[in-house]
Length: 72
View 1 (spheres, helix red, strand yellow):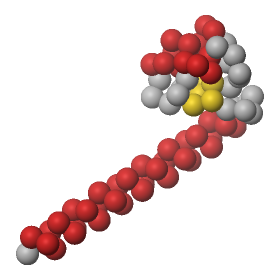
View 2: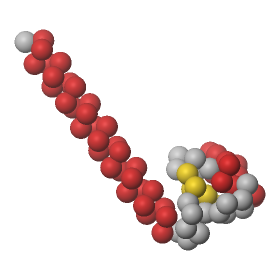
View 3: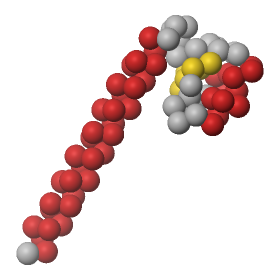
């Protein structure tokens, strides 16, 4: 969800990835705030989210393999 005004506050709070595109009161409700006031900030947010998810999955795989090696 992308929003830029007070009427978007509830949707920004409920969204999985809420992005505020302004410096107004919507930036308080949103988990992410952008200094750029156009929709291209969402592309950057999605790239960062996918990269962090890939890192978390890789770390989980490493920990699982390490624990299996230690067990045997």
